[in-house]
Image (cartoon, rainbow, N blue to C red):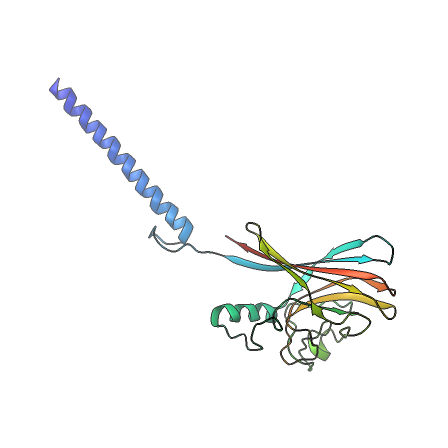
Length: 230
């Protein structure tokens, strides 16, 4: 009987040892998958993606809204502005405050879609411009930003980040045509109201099917900033 008891004890010990080894291996493997490091207590690698999405809703006076969403361009210079602000608190333009942050909506008649690599900062030069519809300067879109008839760039209403990943916040403004018929075909999310300013930076821009507003017509612009991480 003692012989069998010893053998059974050895078997239980072996099973327990094997279970422990499997648990430790799973822990280390799980840590490697999560962190890319065989040290299971290593830091997890978080990947964060910033995106901007655009929608406009045009409403003829006395009519019903007609909405369209459009693919937008997130400018490299706008992304770098955000990156430098986060990493060094020195984005190189203006101190972030109510008068300098990406919550201003600008409009343009320019139907030419911009590209991410176009210069989108500062006053208009041959290669760069912070004005809506003028990204890339005179060698780029070569358009013009609207500044009259109720379409001058203005601060939008901000709804702060909400939801789970992806989280999002919105910047929204409704423009009212108040003087004369005006055609719009592009909207930009910029960091300052004043155009032709040295510290003006585009964050994103979107072109859409051109709309000619008459006096009293409105167009609601909504920019949605989305953060996704994993």
